[in-house]
Each structure stands twice: as C-alpha cells, then as structure tokens.
Image (cartoon, rainbow, N blue to C red; front, side, top):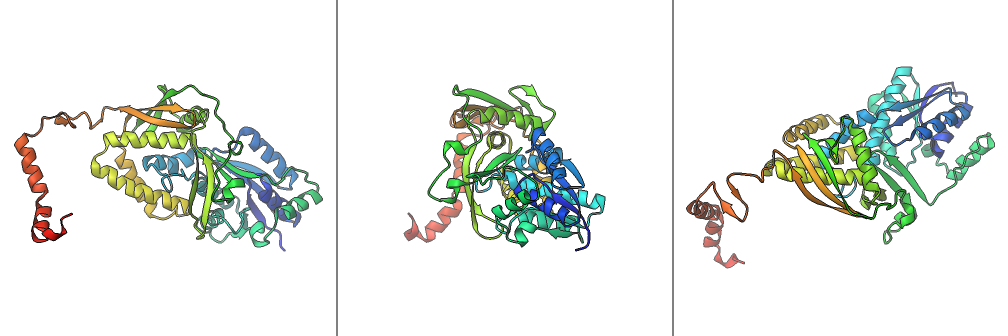
Length: 399
C-alpha cells in the first residue's frame, strides 16, 4: 500500500487508538485530530496528545469547536425546544456532526489523502461521519478499519499490546459519551427492554437534598443570566446550569427510538442543563408567543431536531428553519423560575416584559374588559355555526 497522509478522527478510545497505530505501522503519515465540542476535560486532551504520539502519529491537534457548535446548532435546539421523542436532547448525535465538520475542514487544510474514524457498522455515527466527509471533503478516501474488518474489542487490544502500547481498555459494563449537552450511557441494563439503569450507572449523583430555586434569564431566546449572575459566554452559562442541576441528579432518563439504519435503539442519559434550559425556555414561550407562533415553531423545531439527529445538518433547508426559529425568538425575553429537588424539578413562573398574560383586555376566568357580554354571546353563536349546520342535517349523529 502506498504511503498516504491520513487524518484520524481521534477520541482516545480503543477503536481510534487502534486505527492510529495500525495506519502508522503500515507506513502512513498519520495526523490525529481530536474535535472537541465541549466534552473533553483539559486533562483528557493532554492524555490524548501524549497517547497519539505513542501510537505513532506524526502530529496531534485539538480542534476546539465548542463555540461554533453553540452558535450553529445548540442555540437553535434551545429555540426549538428540541427533545427527540419528547425525551432525549440529542446530545451526542448533534455533537458528532460538528466534530465531523471540523475533521473534514482540517483534512482539507493539510491536503490529506484520507480520513479515518473508528465507527462500527452497527450504529448511527458511521453515517454522520461518512456523510459529512463525502460532502465536506469530496474525493478524500474514508477509512474505517473497525467497521471494514469487523474487529472485536479483544483483537484491537491484542494488537496494541503486542506493539508496545499498554493501556487499560478493559470492557466496562457501561460506555459513556460525555458532552456539553449531556452524557449518553450505553450497555448494561440498557440492552434489556424491561430494565432501567441503577444508581451506579450514572456519573453524577445527588449531593444536594434541600430544595432550591433556579432562575434562568433569556434575551431573545438566549441565556444571559443564571440566578441573576450575568453570562456573556453561553457555554459557561450552560455549564453553570449543569453544575447546579447535576447536584440534584436532574435530567436522567432512557430514550427508545428509531436509528438512521432502521433498527430500534435505546440509550440512557443524564442531561441536567438541557432538560432545565429547554423546559424553562418552553415555559417562557407559553407566555410570550402567540398561539400560531408557538404552533408553527414547534413543527419546524421538531423537524430541525430530526434532521440534525439523522445526519441531515447540511441539508439546504436547515438555514431556512434556523431563520424561522430565530425570528420566533424576538420577544422571548425574561426570567424563568424553576423549583429544584432531588431527581426532579417543577416550573414555577416567569417575569417578562413581554408577558401576554398581562393583557388589559381581560383576566382569564375573572373579568373581561375588551368585550361585552353580548359580544361574547354573539361570538359563541357564530363560532358554533358550522356545527349547528352539520347536526341540523345529521341529527342522528349527535353524540
């Protein structure tokens, strides 16, 4: 095989570690690139760099796209209150797209002949990576050793060990993908449809027992303050909310859904910040959006999340949906109050200058000021006209 310049999408896990070493040992010029969307700690990134060179990489680089991920996707998921199946905040799936974009961009910059990743043939990530590379780096070969060679975990471990790379890649009961928008949990009880995850499966546990209130302030749909502390950096605001909510064990659940490849998939997750932010944002919209603004925004928000999850972020309709979601947020400003308790929370209320509940025309169930009693009776009579017409002709169908 001729020598190639290859970029490996490097996470530091077993599959990508094997890929770096195998391709380097075959005489290729390997560039290990770790695309960080907020899920790697500084210590993990340092360890990744150290290991990449031990594995034979010519160069290692961290591509930090956390802010890009927020600006180009996360904020729209908040605008759209995106929860797949009304449950999962599509944390890992949305991050993979931006990791793939960053890798493709880097591969183009250095003139790579190929891009390699460690996905297997049984999941969604292979599609997210391959589709993005095909579009963003046309003509660049895609290499997937784990998928193409149907490698077992033990075969990869044995290869690394036999070539002098000693690392603990023992098969754990659970596997985790940690990100800024939540942590997914696979394996263990997740594989049994009748079981839920036990306490030990979660990375974050309840450390606060005393109920408290959380205040999240939005300006045009974006977070500007947490408990009245201003945040210009939206990532730091999300991390602050995660810190507060995770101490109560908030955001735990399991999602069952349809994968891109057509089989059903089940994943556990813990996502305190997404759950708190989305429910707070949804509540604020109930007070500040009109009936039809809310209805149509929910429709396109659902499509936005589905396209993002199913590797269609580059579909040309996505910027059009983003434009509608952005427009819908022009009056979504104010502070939302949430009540937190161990393993749960409730929405309390909002304080907003755009609160449509504060109408001078009337208070629901109390007193009308914008119409008379006769106006109400006339409105009701006209509203009932289509039903009176129908049942006047079909009285036998009256329930």
